[in-house]
Length: 127
Image (cartoon, rainbow, N blue to C red; front, side):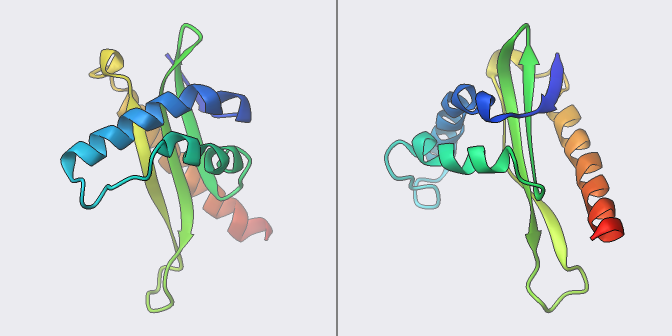
C-alpha cells in the first residue's frame, strides 16, 4: 500500500469515490447533505485546484496501481476572534470497503497532520 500526494492525473480515479462518500453522507442525513445532481462532477475542478495548492493536502492511497482511497484537507483562516489564526480541516476521507481495517485511514490522517505541521512551519519561516 502506497500513500502519496495526489496529482491532477489522479482526479478522474478519485471521482467515483467522491460519488460514494456523497451517497453515504446523503443516506445519513439528506437534509444536511442534500447534494445537487452528480456532485462528483462538481468536485472535479476543486480537486484539480487542490492538487496544486500550497494550502491543501490531497493524498491518495494506491494498491497495486489502483487508487483505493483519498484524503482532502485544507488550511482555513479562522474568524478574527481567536488566538489561533488558521486551522487544518479534513473535508473528505474515503477508503474503499475491501481495503478497510488495514490502518490506511490512520496512516493518511497522520501523514496529513505531519504535512500540515510542516506547511505551517515553512509558511511562518519563509513568508
